[in-house]
Length: 423
Image (cartoon, rainbow, N blue to C red; front, side, top):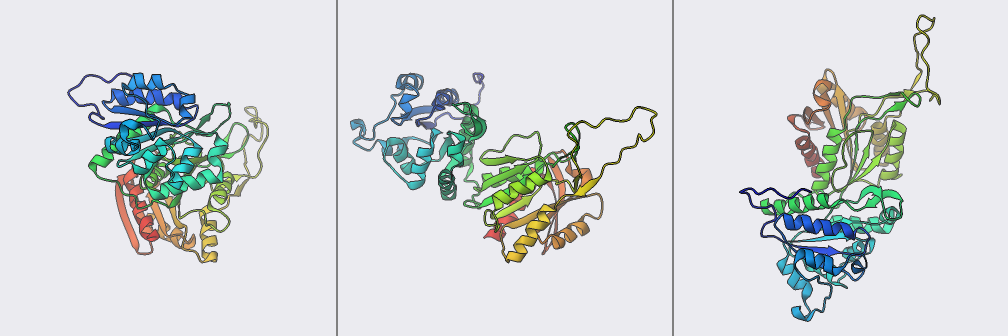
């Protein structure tokens, strides 16, 4: 990151004190870079380390950079045995980066058996944690239970992890975010705190979102697809996470980055999306509180996949027309609506999307009834694809509401209705 230019504006973290806590993971080297970013932004940085962290980063490195001694002893006599309370009183924000699986477990249990855990328990300001561990550790049910508990508590903000290579060369979801992303989360968190706390009306809820197109392969080169970019679904996922929800985003092939605090599952075809939804929702649909089906799922797929690239006939040869036999894909939303009705469940709250070229409200109302869902968000094809804004109509049993706004604002309008039903 380039040094900040000299301007008349104060640095974004001027006057702020950040307690930068390191736990024992190989990603601790990134925290040295994070400290540098925080200092450049005008913050006072107080480094704190667990005993394990010192095996990865030397205390001299951080104390020299931050111009403060590294604190690692709860019983430091300078603080009268209350180092954690003194730190909490001074720090505007506590960041734990990296946050190991062990630290997540101790935070979820409310433990206070070292300085970092005790500081998190008594912190007066916001807490940002950046998980870092092997993908199998992150995916383990116990870790996911701990993360769910922490999200439900609403006391801290998780940044990451992300998909990428980890120390032993394996690739998966567990790599710590880059320092720049953690830094951005810290600045945003303190800015929101100054402006007023954001809504957390979906804390403790699990919201599943589908986004983008599905594509159906004809051969190794060609496929059938549609024009969906995924922007609407990604906006819903981002907004839901900002409101405290645990978010699972099932995404078709799109060129969009994963929103912060969102778990992403990439799929390609309609059948792959169906399998991913079955895994996330569970056999009795007990795995989610709300499902927003913003994806443009292909209605048809080729009856057979050709293992070799299909060759076109030579010019002038007879039979140069091409006929492709298609079969119908399952209607994912209708199937889930039918399962929910059969089980006589009110959850998950179901939201469908309808892209039409005419008679938008009539088609949306029909979809609402036929697919047994709670809401249908309809838009015209001429408005919906590619842009950051949209014109939609949100159709429910109580009527139809037109809305012209940014996709992020539309996402919040949809989530307002979901939160109302969940309440």
